[in-house]
Image (cartoon, rainbow, N blue to C red; front, side, top):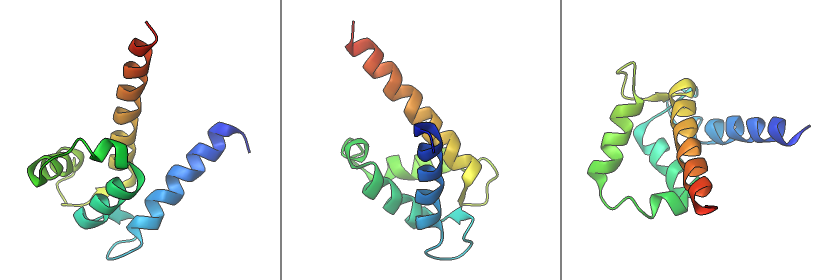
Length: 94
């Protein structure tokens, strides 16, 4: 597999690793999302200081209002974070 294919497979595997823990295996409950973020994005989460921020994030991701994060909603989040990181590092090079 190419680097990009490997990266895509990894994102899918990480989502499934956490979504399969309880309830609907195709969606992340708030607790599963919190565990995923803390375990898989510890550097980013080090900047999140309170539960209200995490709750707000979950609400903004939950576009269909079912109080869970499906894969499409998760990918929207991953895409946004990746764009922000790219912009940050782009400016670091200047």
